[in-house]
Length: 115
Length: 111
Image (tube, rainbow over all chains, first blue to last red; front, side, top):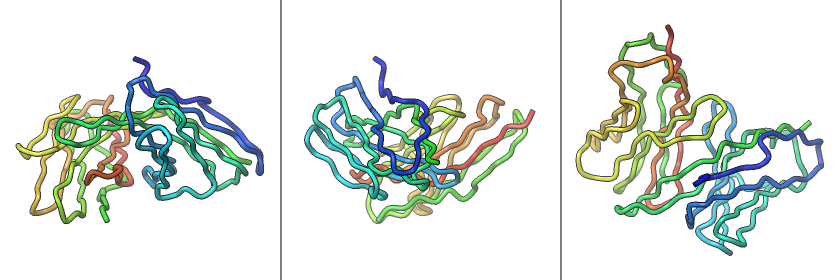
């Protein structure tokens, strides 16, 4: 299994440009997540999905959109890039354990710079 | 609402010395607790998790953590660190909801 894959690995955008960060998992997990990581701030949840066709906002959703048309894919869309969106973006997926807990598996990240 | 506090943002330690990374959480009900590790330029990997039962949880790479309900803590320990343990460590909590992460502790192992 490849696990969670993310593309691209790096991207530089100009202010106002748009882009889609791709995320794919091959573990048949229902739950998928998008986080952003800023230095010293830990991970902040942007959006998450509990299954195909279902998405919900996390802590910092403004400026982003998501869709979940299949179990495997969970793309993150930036419509009008702003310098505040310079960050490292991580996608994760999870399965439910025997105790009802979730264990999340993370992709390698996408480093985005907005100038 | 859940929250996680990692009391130290940076912890320098000499190679082969013991280390403890502290984590406190706030929750009024039973929780699941996790420690993740992030090596430079990589995603997060699960180190260990506490679900129920024994309060001492053993994880990968010689790490262990102890759940203390009365102190709402879940501190991570290793008796002897290696250079390869240099990384950022994140504590996380879940109450059947998306994980809530702490801000991370950067462990720097000095030769």
